[in-house]
Length: 237
Image 1: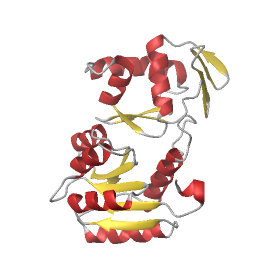
Image 2: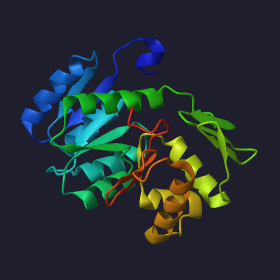
Image 3: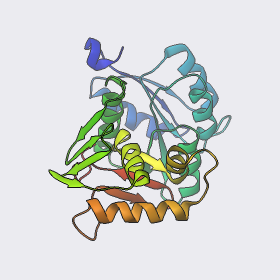
Image 4: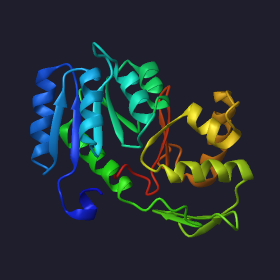
């Protein structure tokens, strides 16, 4: 059970080989009422994870003993615990690898403490939300009726092709999270799909039907990585 269910502090594991970052994050997250444990490498972090069973894991990617990507693989093999990775700005390929390995989100260094705190809150909300598959998804400006294959945006019926509908459903089910090109392709077209250009075409067509300006506010591009869906047209985390 999580913090929202039993009114107890959420348990957060921080894994980073930089002691200064460990100290800053521990202080910032402790002020939010969370219980914190830390590790200075991925291997020790995995041992703490297995013993402590945290609610959220925050991990760096480049570490000795075990990388953050391998840590994601190891955690995801047995658990659905949310993972937030920390990366530097020019590590797009590494971010993609981490997300494909099972990470749920990432924060780019240097980052604001407020952004990290917000992303932790977002992951905790998702883990305390019932996992039933709703027949009707109502999020922000969108109402998606699965059985009827019907979508309304800002109260207006919006006709989508079957693939556009499936793409929107997938994005809505992971609102606020980064979905890689690969994850979207596999979810909508199957595990053998590997054509990012095809995905970009469908995203472009979907945007034409739901966006209100030339600058997308609902389906936001994460350069070289994938997309985030903001159902209210802004990042509310």
